[in-house]
Image 1: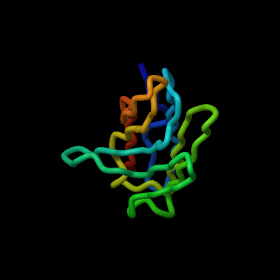
Image 2 (image 1 turned 90 degrees about the horizontal axis):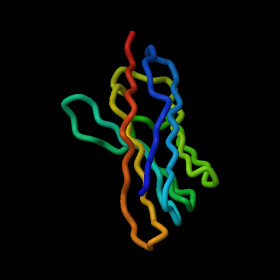
Image 3 (image 1 turned 90 degrees about the vertical axis):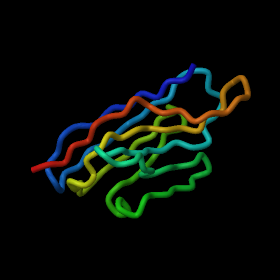
Image 4 (image 1 turned 135 degrees about the vertical axis):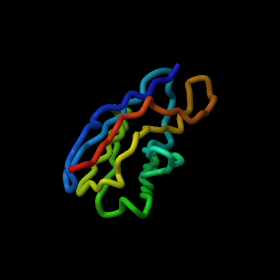
Length: 120
């Protein structure tokens, strides 16, 4: 059993900042990739940022220069620092991870989501 637990969402005014955290727990052997996706009302879920255990980072174009993804592998935690937030960043943010289990199986896992609302 694997769990991804997120925290750090909330409401903020345009131009503000928030920091999301996500910690993985369970029968984990390794985590090749961790990242964040988001889903706004009426829209499809989209990737926001991802970070591999080899250090490869990728951001969707709309957040480049504003969001920073980092991870603490020892804590099995990924962070998303979101700066200069805009109303269009309002969405439910989901942590996701590509996880290799101690059984040798490998799956994608998602957290329950944390709401980010940017409004004046």
